[in-house]
Image (tube, rainbow, N blue to C red; front, top):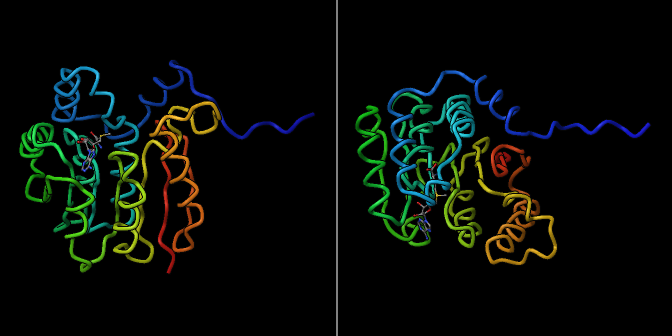
Length: 222
Ligand SMILES: C[S@@+](CC[C@H](N)C(=O)[O-])C[C@H]1O[C@@H](n2cnc3c(N)ncnc32)[C@H](O)[C@@H]1O
């Protein structure tokens, strides 16, 4: 008998079940932020899924993160989760190119009472990230901006990451296209190349998780 595959493929019903079995349930501010973002139309698809946001919050809290970085903030949903996971006195640096989308983020962070923990750097992250001080080191980072920029964001983040610090990288499965040879769009090509680069990086150990559109978790080795 062939060995049983060690994963459970999700369909809509199973995903709904999974989504209903996490704590705490989404609060009113997070829900309204999701609803407001949905009004943007097709761009709303960029928002992190609620289960992924819960995972980001749990990871941030689990490692007692005091300094966190997010590259790709959009309307602030994942940042809200990370900010809520920070240790007391912690700080989240958010990097995004859009004034328009991050204006929505700022509104909701204020409402959620986390605005004072978040520093927003608006502009091309290729430039703004370089200006982030090396000290204090980064405990936790989430990379979720333009895919071609991932190699650079990765370098800027990993060199500032403390030993034992974590980086989460989104969209590493690109809706499954990473394994489809005839898919040669520039985003999937960039993701494939980045996935290989990360795998070869001896500064970290990593695991690719089938959460949302694929999430790689990497831990900086001592
Ligand atoms: C997938 S969305 C981020 C979603 C966000 N993490 C959330 O949960 O709502 C990608 C974001 O990357 C930003 N972005 C794209 N290219 C960028 C660049 N070169 N520098 C900074 N931000 C960039 C976009 O403005 C967009 O808000």
